[in-house]
Length: 200
Image 1 (spheres, rainbow, N blue to C red):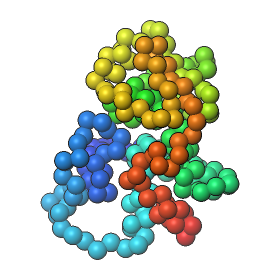
Image 2 (tube, rainbow, N blue to C red; image 1 turned 180 degrees about the vertical axis):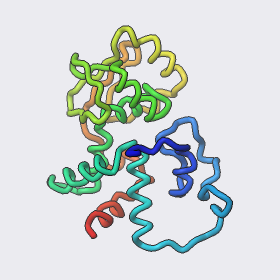
Image 3 (cartoon, helix red, strand yellow; image 1 turned 90 degrees about the horizontal axis):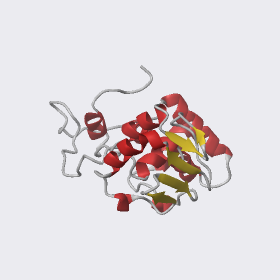
Image 4 (tube, one colour; image 1 turned 45 degrees about the vertical axis):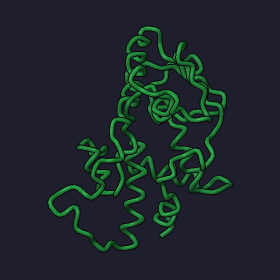
């Protein structure tokens, strides 16, 4: 199958971190790899270190291998720091922006919200989770879906919304103000390892 559908907590434990796409999980959960011998320390190769970081970022944003490679090659063609541009592309995805704005508990949930046609971008229906937003784009929730989204948002602390988007909780609107800076994105990511992975 193109997309991983198993237990994501176990998957992220193999990467040595908690599931970065799920607000319900706490940092106090076990961090060693899953399985009977998960706590045993193993010496891993340089290639494995690069691969694990790439997989960690890819699974966090719920993108396929093909999609991730496409994002990397797009970032590599642009002027600037390739790793930062790669993360900016991933952060600009519609499903991720909904997650960052507090419109879903997990990225899987916001992906489903987009797939089911609950949101519009600049007044037009968009049901593609990988749709890339540009500065000034306005994401809104359809009137018939408002009650459901408000019940979801009631469970989430909206103070967690980043500075590069503006969230109107009453109107259920998100304004994508700008691309995030590197210090505004996840510090757990070591994107340089991903660049080294694709450069080999």
